[in-house]
Length: 258
Image 1 (tube, one colour):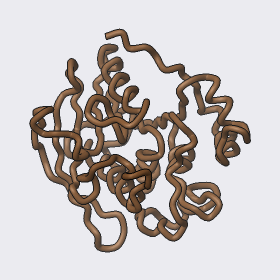
Image 2: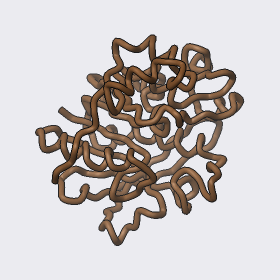
Image 3: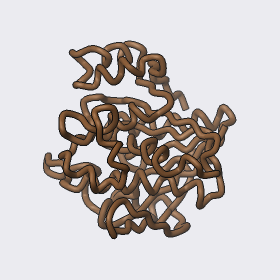
Image 4: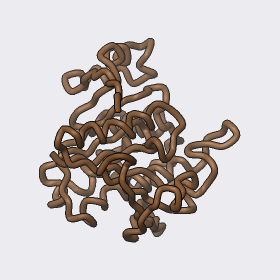
């Protein structure tokens, strides 16, 4: 099976929390089971070209809305100790800064722009590689727009003719919430900003997009998958998750012994 695994942080390249550990270990474990896995993440300033012996591969550009183009340079290396290829999408204006999501305790004000452009660019990777994935695996809010962009603009694309989408929910407390007026910057059709899609009490909710548009959802444990369907732990998304419960699975994080 061909798996395109996307995350905003992957150990050992960039890490703020447990997501990076999972994103660094799971693709390697899947590869050992015989799957063909490629990982895509942003190229932050902390991802040093010399240290990781990155190879510069290609340039691509995407447009979200209006006349603004987002150029990216693709760099690559193997996940240490494996043959899993990691592709880094570099845009210095968006990701060439000190932090991953924030500095001095404050979120970057352009996080909507940063991770929407990244998510849209991810979908150009299979075209460039001439490589059709069977699974697009997203993680948390930063990459949760990918299945929405896929449905809006790639439904007839030959690169995705057999693809299924999976979103892993690591922490529902972080949802990628932005002002409602910012929806126009995403380049998605207007019908994607409704209570059934990305709209969340007047705001744009990236994580909700992934919950609504992904084929399958999973959490980091069976208990957590049940908890997030309650008002106490659902952070306002319990109703949406209850509606998707037939496609929501709790899979306990494994232990990496290697």
